[in-house]
Length: 437
Image 1 (tube, rainbow, N blue to C red):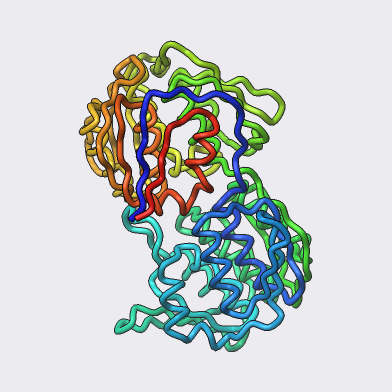
Image 2: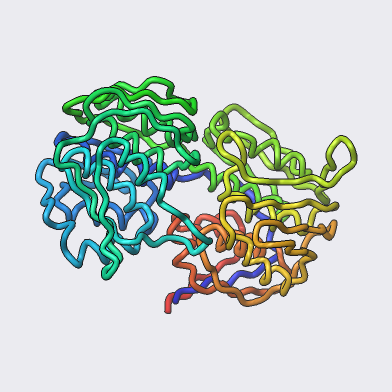
């Protein structure tokens, strides 16, 4: 189990650019299965989740050619559909949450798919009902083999367009249904669809491949199915979660930092909420500058009540950013209620922040009150174990702003979402040592 040794209290200085968006990468890589023509994707992050998904497709028969370290060419013209029945496929797909988005493309193009219970972050219940409901509305049949924990999906008569109202605006669920619908016969209408920038990117890529999708950017999508899609080229947006992570690091360490090429128009409410906890962001074109301050002041609501920071569907705050805001608020002046609505286990890393001296009241699995200290380096170093990607990066942010030297174990979780994060931060002045066990 690899670890980070983090010497806290060092301010960062310089500039850094976010890598390509992990969540978008997982969606569009799966979309390459929809055509037998070449699809080139650039600005890919070299992180474990992306690499593992690419390797899974390669073993399925997709031709994979790295043009450079962040650009990859895919051609799914010789897929061995029988591979999805093998134990090797089940084992690798089960270890990767993103594998669920192969369902739509496989069923749409080959009429069958297999899904073991997918892995990913242990952050609470992550149901797949929206995926299954949508594919069933398109005509797919589901069987669940209890003895092996395996879903078998088939569409022997092909998929057919339909109207559906999703029970939740699931991002991966929307992606799966859209990818299936583009090859279905007739029109599909999806109401309460997710409309995050990464879903918009997926839809735009599919349109360049020959799909016809109306309502991109809204929660009402209409897809007119086609019999065949062609190749295309696609570039990923910057990862907004990396952007939020770097803002949090700058704030936690009282640093001057310039974030380059962040995709400002695709950040939703994130910059505004950072401003509300006292972090001033200078927007310079597509860059963001965070200047050093003596302390951050948390605003109250207009009526004087305590500020609440909660996740919400786009353009609200991404649930992946909640852990970052919680950590940063520990040393701002004032109090804030953090409300993580989606996942019931995502705030459980708070116990480690309590060990570091943070003043936090965990009200229930979804809510925590943070009482900020009002000064930098208010936390003390400790040993921690990263339970998931976002808690892991929050622990790293806390360690960077703490007094003393902390150890973070199980950093493979952080590597799943952040490319060479230790090397990139050390170039800015951080003191992080990686120990590979």
